[in-house]
Image 1 (cartoon, rainbow, N blue to C red):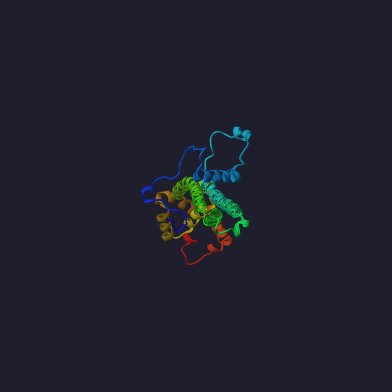
Image 2 (tube, rainbow, N blue to C red):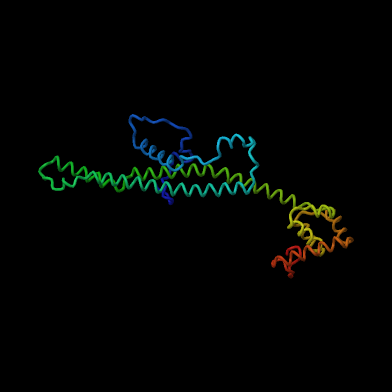
Amino acid sequence: MASASGLRQPKEANKGKNGFREKHIPLDLANPDDLAISRHHFAQYILASKGSYNGPSLKELIATPSAPPVETLAMVEEKIKELKKQHQEDLELLTAFQAAEYRQEVLDRYNCIDDSMMGVDPEDLIQVDYLAALDELYSDARPMKRFQHDVDDALSQIRYNYLKSLLPLLTQRRTLKMRETRVRRQRDAQFPQNIEEYHNIPERDTQLRIARFLMGSTSDQEKMMDHYGWVWRAVQPLVSTFKTNEGFKNEILESVRDAQASDPRRRPTTTPGWQF
């Protein structure tokens, strides 16, 4: 039974089971059947399209550190992007290969017809049966169920291998995103205790957030404390420094003013200052 995607669907008895063998099972080479032939054709396609190695040399592999690099979210995103691109190329190559195979099979069967037999004697049953067999062979060449099944099998195998590689990457990406969110929330919940800690903040956006908090009204500060999980005893030392240190206050004012001038979205509006 075909689905909306065009692929054959599993029988009810086989649902929930892995229909792909994870290990090689040798076939009877002396008596190959359609399955063996189709697998041979598919192996030819794999060798033709993926038979080369473009990775690092043996010398480079030996020189590579044994410990793998720590993968970041950007690295995993790039792997997913490359995998999807490669999968699309695999489908295009497979389509071209199967079309060429089908065309050659049709031509071979077409060439089996002997045009000289068109004027056979209807009384000669041998010639009549021979011509009928050739006509049947050519007529069956157009639908060719075997080729349809070969295409389904090859597409299913390629998609299975693709998903087998993609799903772990998606899981890894989800884990890294959750970790980044957790780290970001922990970082946002931290508040510098003095001017030195403020200057040591590596992210410019975080510095601007602190600066807007210091410049905000009491109600704006309370809203930001609720939003970022800050407590008063954590923000009070820097707030006191901001009120008493004119040099630091001027630095904060200049920082926010520069940010508003460089980004039109951060120009003064009626919106509370901490939401610029």
